Structures are given as structure tokens and as C-alpha cells.
Length: 246
Image 1 (tube, rainbow, N blue to C red):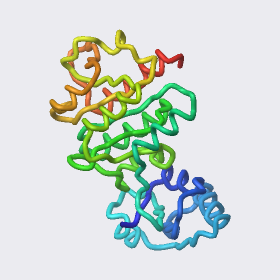
Image 2: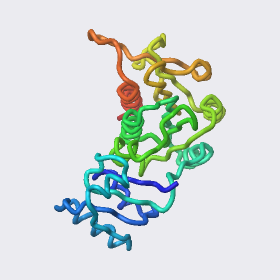
Image 3: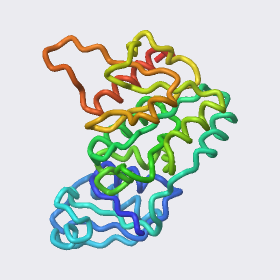
């Protein structure tokens, strides 16, 4: 399945990623300016075909009006990684492990936002399940503002098995859960760590919670007593950044 990337930031990041195999860049005939000129220059430098097309053609190709006037057509599908690659890269780096696990995040906007937050926090890899989850679609890539280009993402058959694999390698796994008895500011986030964020509606699944070393909650002080999955995950990620020395 071919990979489409649309939106100013994702397309720009993709054009700068020299390991990405791109077939062509489609630009709206109504779009101009410095950003488009830079995109065309980057494409020319990589011998990528550039076509000026109508907005209708862009919408038909992207499947949405939310393309911002640019669409990249890649030669290959999204390059999902393997969890074993994550572990190998981590061990060779000598750095502390820092992973994000997304359990059944089905909303593309939340998925993209979480990947964007993970990239900003310095996460080494994001793990998503094969089923009952959003995949890395053009909408997710747009919502991530291009973070999917730079962030390694693994798709696994079973999240519980993936957690066990990380734990066997020495990673401490913390699930973000409203009913967690420890709050995130007291939870130990400064070692080899994986944070697990559950679905928008029901949170972490029972078997996933059982595999976590710890369930941690986010203290609420206002009249609104809940955050959505992307907000909760972002708060937890940056508490980890704080504990790990910024």
C-alpha cells in the first residue's frame, strides 16, 4: 500500500529525510510562496518529480481537503519497525531506555499528537498494536506535524507480550491509569522506562494493566476531572523528562 503524506510540516520533514523513497510531489496550482519554493528545491535536489495540479486532484489523491496544498506520494508503505530493533538500538546507545506504548488509541488526532509529544520528549520508539488501533495513516502523520518521519514506530500483535519483552530486557513499565494509587510525580520515571497510555474511552485493557510494573495517575485539581488520552500521555512523558534531568 502506497504511503501518502500531506500537510506543510509533514511534507517538509519527509523531503528532508533522505532515507525516504518518494515518487512525486503534488502541489496545488493555487499554492505559492517561500515554503513551496523550498519544497520544490528540495525535491529537485533529490530528483523527485514535481507536478502542479488542481485542488480537486489533490483532494481526490489525499482523500481530504486538509492537505494544505501539498501531497507527497511515496514508493513504499509506512516503515514499521520491530521491537527487537528498539532493544538493540537502546542497548548499543548506552542511554536510558525511554519508550511509549499506545494501547488501543483509535483516534488519528490523538495518535498523531502522542507521537509528536513522544518525539519532542526524546522517546526512542513508539509501540502500537496491530488491531483495535489507529494505524500510521496520512491523517496521523498530519496530526504529528511530521514526527512520524523521525520517530521509530513498531506495530505488534500483542501489547502484553511486548511489555513482557521490555520487562525481560530490564525496562520499568508504568501504565497511566486514573485509578492508579501512585501519582506520576511520585512514580520512578528516571530509569529505563516505558510509559503505557490507554484508549480514549476505557483506558488500559485489563491484561495490559496486569503486565505493568506500576499504575500511576495524574492528580486533578480543577472542576473538570479528566484529560483525553493525548493530554494525559503528554503530561506523563514530560514528567519523565523532568525526572530524567530535562
